Length: 338
Ligand SMILES: NC(=O)c1ccc[n+]([C@@H]2O[C@H](COP(=O)([O-])OP(=O)(O)OC[C@H]3O[C@@H](n4cnc5c(N)ncnc54)[C@H](O)[C@@H]3O)[C@@H](O)[C@H]2O)c1
Image (cartoon, rainbow, N blue to C red):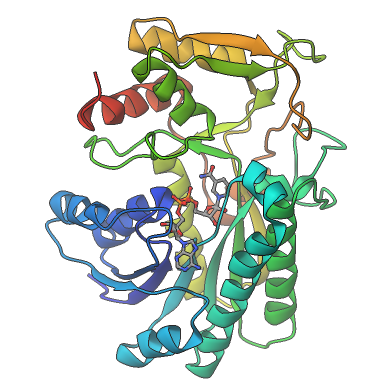
C-alpha cells in the first residue's frame, strides 16, 4: 500500500474508469476529475463495486482553473494521468475550435495548476493518430508527426507543449502514451466502452449492429491494397493499455524521465473484416454490415512498433483479439443487452 494520490482526469470515461480500478488495485489513491460531458456518474459506483473502495471524485471542468487549483489545494498530488479530452475524429472536423478549446486549453490549465503546486510527474493520453499517414510500418516513435484532422492536431500540440515543459526543466517526468485502438472491457462486465450514446469506434459499432435490428453497420471500403481490401488496425485490450499506464506512472515516480513518447499497441495489423469475423465467432451470430465507400481521411494501414515499449517500460500486450471480442460481448450482455 503506497497511498500516493494520483490525479486522474477523465476518470469516469472508458479508459479512466478502468485506470481508477487498476490504480486502487496497485495501492494508489486515485483522485478522479471529470465534467461528465461524455460519461456518467454511475460509473463511479461500478468502480466501487469492483474495488470495494470509494474513490474521491470531483466533478469539474478543466476549462475552469479555479476548480483545478481547489483540487490541488485539497490534497497533495504526487502525479497526474491526463485522459480528459474530446476524442471523436469526425466531430473534430465539424467543431475544430471546440476541440482545440477543450483539449489544448484543458491541458494548459492543468499544467499551470501542477506548476503552482510543484507537481512534475505526468502521464498523457496521446494517440497513434499523431503519426498521420504512415510513411513506414510498423509505426515507431521516431516516425514524423503529422495531422490529418483537428483531433490529431490537438494531440500533436499537447505533445509539443509537454516536450517543451519537460525538456526545459531539470526535474520533470512526462510520458506520452500513443494508444493504437483500445477495445474490450473489464472482466467483471461492469465497465466498458459506451455502446448507447454515439458509438464511433469499431467495437461499440459492432455491438450496436448486433443490438439494433434496423441498424446496419458500414465497412468503409474493401478495395484498398491490403490482404482483403479493408483497412488494417492494431487493436489493444483495455487491460493491456491500463498496465502500460501503471508502468509509465511508476517510471515517472522512480526517475526524472524528461519527455518520452511510447507506443501502446499490439504490433499486429488486423483487417476490419478479420475483426468482424472474430467478433461474430465469439458472438455465435452474424453482424449486419455492408461494404460502403472509402471514408475520406481513413489511414489504410496502421500498427505499432512495440520495441520501445518493451525496452523502456518492459511492457507488451498479453490479450489476443478473441479475448477482446469476448470481453466486449460480456460487457454488452451485462449492460442489459440481448
Ligand atoms: N478510446 C480510444 O479509442 C482512444 C484512442 C486514442 C487516444 N485516446 C485518448 O484517451 C483519452 C481517454 O479516452 P476515452 O476513450 O476514455 O474517452 P471518454 O470520452 O470515454 O473519456 C474522456 C472523459 O473525459 C471527460 N472530459 C472531456 N473533457 C473534459 C473537460 N474539459 N473537463 C473534465 N472532463 C472532461 C469526459 O466526460 C469523459 O468522461 C482521451 O484523451 C482520448 O483522446 C482514446
